[in-house]
Amino acid sequence: MKAEDIFSETIRFRGHNNVLSTHRNTVEITTDHYISRRADCILGVDAGKGCNNLSAELKGHIKSGGALRLEVVVEDQSYSFRGIGSPDLELSDPREIVFRRSNFASERTAAICCSAAAVDIPRRMVQMLQKPETVGSLTIIALNQFQSMISESPQIEFAETIG
Image 1 (tube, rainbow, N blue to C red):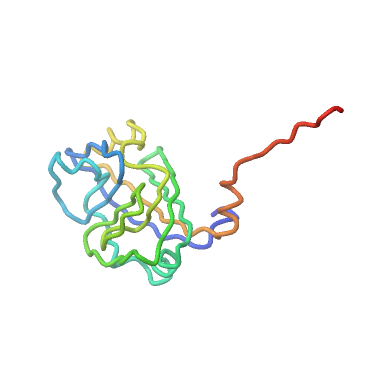
Image 2 (tube, one colour; image 1 turned 90 degrees about the vertical axis):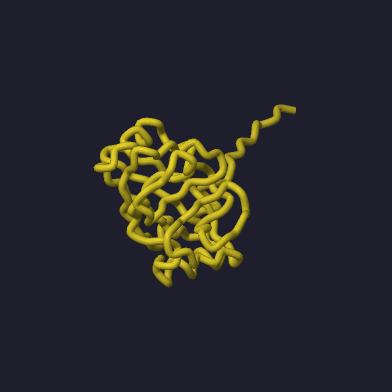
C-alpha cells in the first residue's frame, strides 16, 4: 500500500466472451454468470460481491465522500483510476458494482466523478477478459483525503521575472 492509502478491499471476478469494455461513462463488475454483448460497460462476471456486501468500513468511507483509487489486475496487466464517494450513494445492490464518470447515484454506484470508464481499460486486458477462464481482481483503495488532493493538484511553476 502507498502512503496515501488508508485501507482496501479486493474483489475477484472472471472474464466472459461477451466482455467488450467500450462504454464511455461507466465500468462495472457483476456477480451474474452471463452477460449479453449489450453489456458494454461490464469488465467481469462472477464477482465475489455486489455493492451491498462491501465492508462497513469501506461503505463509510465512500458515503463520507472519500477519495478512492480503483486498481484492476488481470494476470500481469494492471490499470488504475480514481473516483470519489458521496453521501448520495446507496451501496445496496447485491449483484453489481458500478464506477461512473458522472455524478449519477444509484444503488449500484460505488464511485462517481471517476477518471476512467470501460473504454479506457487497456485493450490487451480486455482481450484477456474475453476468455471465461481468465481471473481478474478489482481493488477499491480508500485514500487519505488530504494526500489524495495533494497528489492530484496541478504543478505550478513560477518564472523568475527580470526587471
